[in-house]
Length: 132
Picture 1 (cartoon, rainbow, N blue to C red):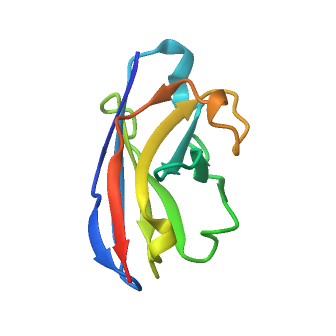
Picture 2 (picture 1 turned 90 degrees about the vertical axis):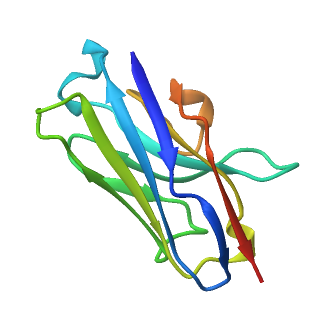
Picture 3 (picture 1 turned 135 degrees about the vertical axis):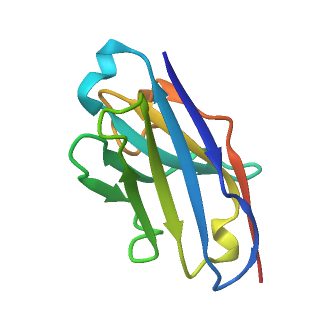
């Protein structure tokens, strides 16, 4: 079982910053050793869910969508084996109105970064609203 819980969304003016958090509670042995990817996606009304960033949970290698490169940073605070939980952050800076939407945390073992259907576990999402 893998549970994902997002937090940190809110309203901010253009140019501002927000930090999203995703607490990943992992009780599935197939995800042992943090051998899975954690990604952030976003979706705004009338649009498809789009990839924002992803990170290899065990090793920290990250990828970003072109639209957020240089402005967003994904990182992990690992539990070092003490608990079954990691926290994945998405630090968002220089926010634009086009960054608005519901942001989702997702996890999967074998993924295509840009394809949300390849992620097997999802959180409920957190709303981000950027006003001009």
